[in-house]
Amino acid sequence: MLILASNSPRRSKLLKDAGLDFIVEPSHLEEIVDEKLKPQEMVIELAKMKANYVAARHPKDVVIGADTIVVFENQILGKPVDEKDAYRMLKLLSGERHTVFTGVALVRGKKVETLLSASEVSIKSLSDMEIQNYIKTGEPMDKAGAYAIQGDGGYLVDHYKGDFFTIVGLPLKDLLEALKTF
Image 1 (cartoon, rainbow, N blue to C red):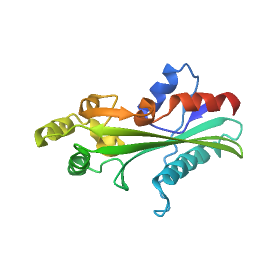
Image 2: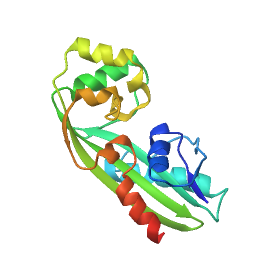
Image 3: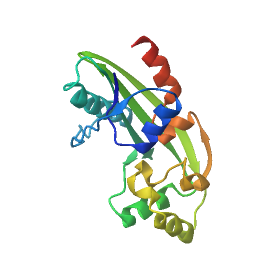
Image 4: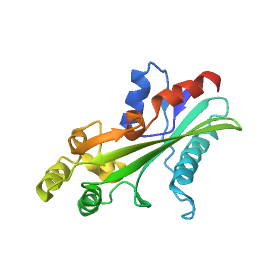
């Protein structure tokens, strides 16, 4: 059986759209990692923590853990804690380019394989009104970097370079390749 260790409706939709049969069992663990890690290492560690947590209860099944972070000028922008924080993040990103990292961990028993994918995103220069109107949609509140490229937040994006699905939260092509041999 394939298990997605994530509560993300976006990740579930991507796996369903890819035709995979899976169940969802979120990890619900506190995400604490060494702050000295590079963002690329941190996102992999978080993905492994989530997958290992769920895999401990399902040692014969393949568990997918994933984590996505937005990095701007070496600052990690996670999910905003409130609307003020969402505004701060979007104001930082306005007119700028940042990197989105998604780490994925596949775990079955003691076997672990990890994937890291990165994409660059350029956000348009946004007025305060545009930022406030976007925040009013509620969409930014559970998204790393306070925007969703696949939703209304797509209108904030000027362009991107790399894998679109990495930005959404699951590098699907890489994951499907890894699952073939895992």
